[in-house]
Image: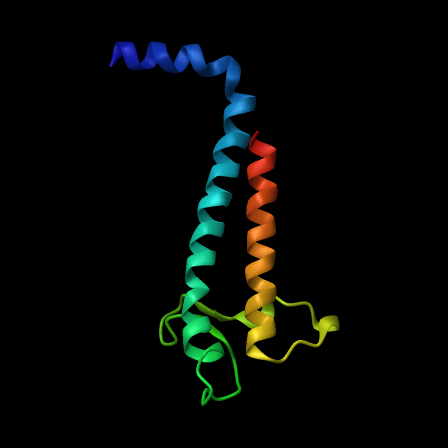
Length: 105
């Protein structure tokens, strides 16, 4: 335990560099998860020709951890088609992921 506390003391001067790095890594992890979750609406509502028009639910519909993907798209773009909304979210997540990755370098 003494060695661990000594190791933490050596890292103390670098806290201002460590905290943003940890926060940016958490953001990259969240964006990767969001990008993986985008596969569900692609297969459920975009690629199915008989899919009903309506909310694009991301996550489990009956759980507290879901939301309508159309909330991500700004209203002034007037995107109502499921493919347009999913493509916009995919491009936004990919661009933000690349931007966060560039800031880490």
